[in-house]
Image (tube, rainbow, N blue to C red; front, side):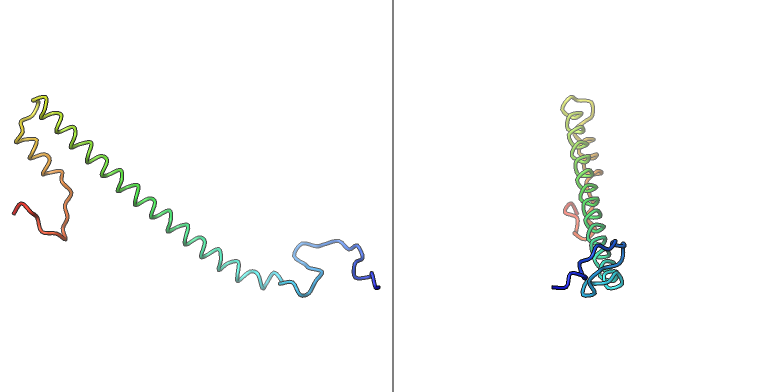
Length: 102
C-alpha cells in the first residue's frame, strides 16, 4: 500500500488536497444565490412583522380612545351627542366600501 498520499502536509486555507471537492470558485455563485434568497426572505419577514405590529398598535390605540370617550360620556364630562360625534370622527375610513350612514 502506498502511504505517500497520506503524508503530513500543512493545510492551506482555500486549498484542498482532494481535486474532487468543489473549489472556492464553484461554491461562490451558489453561496451568493443562497444568501440572496435568505436575505430576501428575512427582509420580507421583517417587513410583514413590522406591518402587523403597526396595524395592531393602531387598532389598540383606537380602542383605547373609544373607551376613554365612553368613560367621559359615562361620568358626564361630555354629552352623549358629542361623544357620538367624536366616535364617528375617529372611525377608520374604508374608501373601497360605501359608507353606511348615507
